[in-house]
Amino acid sequence: MSGSRDGNGATDTPRAVFGWDVGGAHVKVSVVDAAGALVDVAQWACPLWQGLVHLERVIDEVFARWPAAGVPRSHHAVTMTGEMVDLFADREQGVLVLARTLAARLGANARFFAGKRGWLRDEDAVAQWRAVASANWLATSQWVATQVPNALLIDIGSTTTDIVPIVDGHVAARGSSDAARLVTGELVYQGVVRTPLCGIAHRIAFRGATTGVMNEWFATSADIYRLTGELWPPHDQHASADNGPKNIDASCERLARMIGRDAVDASVDEWRAFAQTWRLEQLRMIGEGLAQVCAAHPALADAPLVGAGCGRFLVVALACETARAYVDFSELVRDATLSSAHTEAHLDDGAHAPADPDADVRAQTHTPSHEPNEWIATCAPSVAVALLTAMGETRRDGDSKHAACAEPVRAV
Image (cartoon, rainbow, N blue to C red; front, side, top):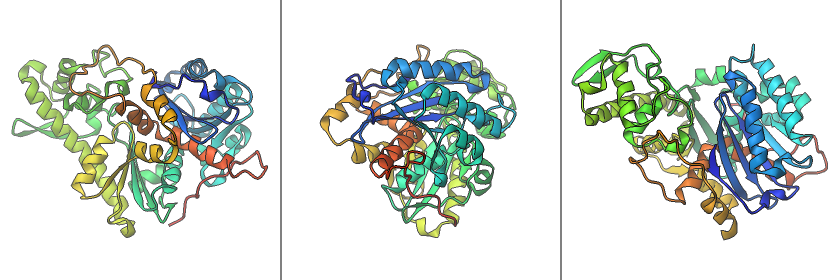
């Protein structure tokens, strides 16, 4: 578990909203208080493909962190991508199992994000599973659309990248499902922690020659960004490819193995340079998706990039490459919701879980004010569903089944 914690009991209010993003590898939870201010954010590793016991464990830890989350009157807004894991026979079964499990633990006020269909109870989420499945990108982009009318949202996470066009305050994505978004370039299966390196390039330059890459799970993208110094250790929550240490020397060993070598075959500086080559390859793949999305939306030719996710440092690089302005998701949230110094103090001074003891933290230092920004941006979908629900609470007209939602996806 990692995150920033509000220890002041602000979550005890009946109108506090707990936003959940239940993925296949992590569960992210954010808390928005009765005034609509974000007061806490946290992430837990959750290898869901290994069994529901991991989700049950995370729910227990959420309740331990925020006791108010476990009381019957608590409000929970849920989005998911975990239905895709191979624990389930298919996505429909995944939505069914996750919705029922979460509803049983979270209570009657749990609602599931379904895009333009609104917020659904668990039984309706099961019946309309296609609208619920892998919709977390839509939640984030709907909230961003309320803040930036024309933008390209790029959320680079541990495993995937979402590229979402926002035009005139509407989400203008051409695809709605993972399958469709893989076609349109709006979903790129590249992340900065869990992506196997053989999924980034099949041939790569090393010492002036181009070499083949071993098609083995010898190293992951986390090894790249440990060596470049860009991966914040608390984001590095999963085991390495060989279950070995997550430090500089071990990452060099794993990178070397990808091209049939040993770490002693080159200096650490050479392996760091090699990591930069891998970084460029991954950035190229994400850039191809961005170019495809931009080609479909000429109105966004000069639009800023809004960066989210633990890999948004690559969005900064893309903004530089494409001569676009960069806006950080965390700053949008702070500008929109942190209405008092009291609330900001909760996020800045909260308790943080220690970094992995095997991680090499020498490459990059982080100030206390940096940490909440990291968690806000990394947990963007959970923040978004909490904020969208809080917005809906202020506009409710008595219908408790479907809370108001931000602008729906516009067909383009």
